[in-house]
Amino acid sequence: MRRAVCPGSFDPVTNGHLDIIARASRLYDTVYVAVMVNKSKQGLFSIEERIDLIEQVTADLDNVQVESFHGLLVDFCKQREIPAIVKGLRAVSDFDYELQMAQMNIGLSGVETLFVPTNPAYSFLSSSLVKEVAQWGGDISHLVPPQVLDALNAKLRQQ
Image (cartoon, rainbow, N blue to C red):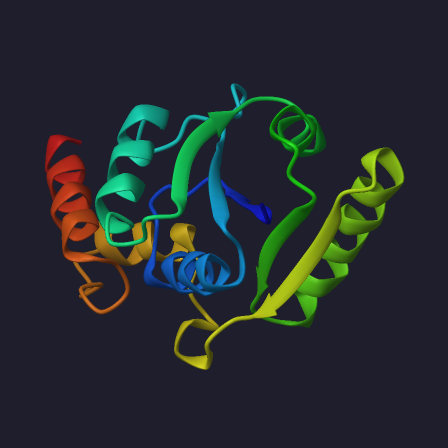
């Protein structure tokens, strides 16, 4: 069985993330979406909320499983016998950072990294940018799935 993981913070999940996850799901039998737990950072959405949103927006992808992880991604991969990490690249600046991570990961555990060029429609998109635009009342409806838009608007009203 061919397995891969798409890791990230997904705070919140965007259409760019979904594009990479869907493309990976066509290449692999099972794709894990690993939601990173970073106790030193306070996200807008809790880990449980992020997992729930990702499960909702990937419900039509039968081979996608969503889990959280804390620690080294290669340990997550070893525990589940995942030989490949799938990462989307938006720009050269992403490549510089991700190449270092890929080289470290293969050196630590032999886990390969597959770089997927992002869809040009999402080349500028990040969760941070989505949150910032939403906080200022900008229209992000074309950048996130409807469920995420609703959850983000509700979360921002609470603040």
